[in-house]
Image 1 (cartoon, rainbow, N blue to C red):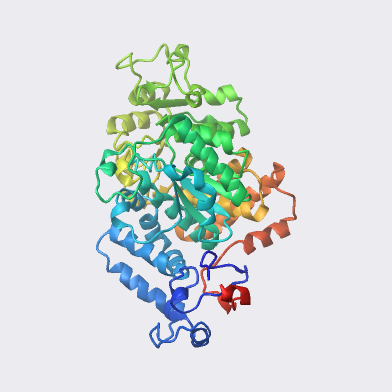
Image 2 (spheres, rainbow, N blue to C red; image 1 turned 45 degrees about the vertical axis):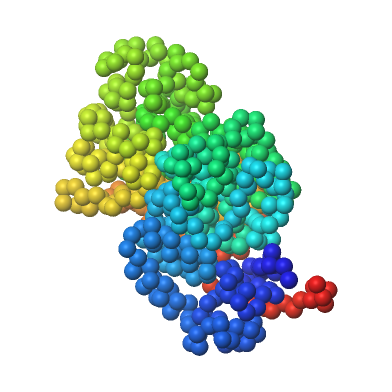
Length: 578
C-alpha cells in the first residue's frame, strides 16, 4: 500500500479516513495520537501492544511534554525538542505551542531559528518538506508528486541565500520555511497537512557550510544568472501544474533576486514576498499604532531608514502609499524619506543604483546646505542631524549601528522619537531597547524585530513590542484561503497593515504595548484575515460573498489542534492484490 497520501479523506469537521494501521499509523505525525489513542481505536487500528496500557488525555500529554521541554538546558536543545515533537505528533506539538506561544515562539521562530539554520546539518533528524536541488532540475514534477500530502494550500519557499541577518546558509535555510509554516498553523489556523516547506538548493557561497564535513546540501558554488532563473521558472511552472490554487510565500531570497522574482511572478500565481510585503505591512501597522502614542499623524513624519535593500525599500514604499492615502502627494511623501545604505545616503548623483533604490534618492540640491562630517559619504548621523527624522528604522542586518550619538541627536529634535531596530536575530539588532530609552530620557517609542524583555525607565516597566511578521503572514494566508483570492494585491497588504494597527492596545492606553500580546495572536489573525479577504473582493481578485459567508469561511479554514476522529478505510480488492 502506498503511504504517499496519509491524510486522504481529511474532513474539516475533524474526520480522517486512513488505511494505515499499527506501527505505520503511530509513525505518521499528522495522525498519531500516541498514548491518547482510545481503547476502541487501539482495537480498530491494531495498536495493542505498541502503546503503554494507560490511555492519556491531551491535557496529560501536554503536562508531560512541557515538563520535558523545561528540562532542556539551552534554546537550541529546546528547538530540537519541539521539532522532534512536531515530527512525532503534530496535534500535540501545536496544542503545546499555542498554550505557551509567548515562551515558545522565539524558540521555533526568531531568534533561535537563525541558529537552527546555521546548525541545520548537525541537528537534522527527520525529513520534512521538499528539496529541489539544481542537479534534479529536470524532474521537478516528479519531486512535487512526492509531496507527503495530497493537497497543499500554502508553500513557503527559500533558496537559503539571505537567512535573517546571517546571510547565505545554503540547505540550512530549510529551517526557515519549516518555522514559518509552523506559525501559519499556530497563529493562522492553517491545517498542517495543507502546508509544504520547500528549499531550492542552488548551492552556497558560504565557506563555513562548504567546509563542514556534515553539511547536507549540494556542495557547489551558488548557481546564478540565467541558470538560476531557469530553475525558478521550472519550479513555478511545475507548481502551477501540481497545485494551481496554492499560496506561495517567497522567503529570504537575496536582494538581487527578491524584488524581481516577486515582480515576475506575483500576477502569475497567488504569491507574495514576506521580507518585502509582510515586513512592510508589519512596520506600517506598528507605526500607525505609534502615532496614537506620539499624538501625531503619519503624514507629518520624516523617516530615516538604515538598510536600503529590498526589505528597506519595500517598507518605505508601503509607508509612502500610507502617507498618500492620508493626503500627501507622491512627491511630498517621497521627499520625507532618507534611505542610507553602505555607501551612505542614496543620492540622485549615485551611479549604478538598482531600480528599486532609484525611486528613493534625495536630490543633491535639497541637501546642499547640510553640514557634513565627510562630504564624500553622507552618514546616518549626518542624516539625523540635518533632516531631523522623527522615525528611525533599522533593517541593516548589522548590530549596534544606532549609536548613542545618533540616538541622542535624534532625541534633540523629536519630542517622541520612534525607533525600530528590526534586524534579527537579537545579535544583529541595531540597538538594545533599554539603551534607546536611556539615551532619550525615556521618550523613545520602540519596537524591535526579535523579542526583547520589557525595559525599565523612571521606575516603570515599558513593554517592547516585537514588530513581528507573524502578525501578518498567517493572516494573509487565512484571508486568501477564506476568500479564494487569486492574487495578493498592494491593497490587501495595506488592509493587513491598517487592521493590525486597529488591534493595538496603545490606541486605547498610550502606556500599553504598540502591538497585542502574542498569546492573543489568533484573535488578531482573524481580524486581519477578514480585512484582507474583504479587500481581495474590493480589488476584484476574489469573488464577492456576503460578510456572513466570509465569516463562515474563516471559521471553516481555522484548524484547532485536537485529535481527529479516525475511520479505518479498508483497501480495495485491487489494492490488496497489489
